Amino acid sequence: MRLLRRAGRGAGLGLLHAAVVLAVYTALRFQTGAGRAGFVQDSSTNLDNLRRFPFRVLLLSAVVVPDTAGLLVLVPLVVALTASARWLGRLPTLVAFAFGHVGATLVVAVVLVAGLTHGRLDPAVAHAPDVGVSYGLACVVGLLAARVPRRLRVPYVLLPSAVLAAVLAAAPDPTALGHLVALLTGFCLAVLVRRGARAQLP
Image (cartoon, rainbow, N blue to C red; front, side):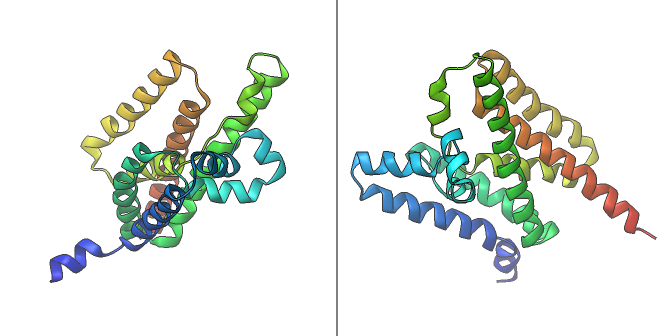
């Protein structure tokens, strides 16, 4: 019983987020194909929606997955949020998730605007759907680098960074850029947290 309580400690935030995503996904299954596509489009943090409804889409986009394959990310989401909540608490974990989600979204938006302004991107990118939990998840995964044992910290940081950088170099894509930005944001937060912890030591 004690083992179960220990395993469940801190899991509330991750399970709640996953439950909301599943509830939204299930509700969309009862919609027509056009209805589902319309809701995903309206929840997207594309440039058009960010101009018109920034706060709404920044919130909704973090609880919408575009298809069944998107549900696979819920397992690492629950694991990462639970680990962070046990370590730092629910509120700091939620702040880190939001920081990664919003920060990466805004960086991608700035890059897209610059590309459109200089005629380097297809104007259709302003309407392209962009939803999901993965930016926030990437940031929390980066934050957890501060909890990784010292001997494993270098590969923990380098491996996902190299993979995302390689993906971005092979096929430049706003989403790949967003994931890399979110991960690096998490690493920066990890450095700040470790420095703060050292400063509190006697």
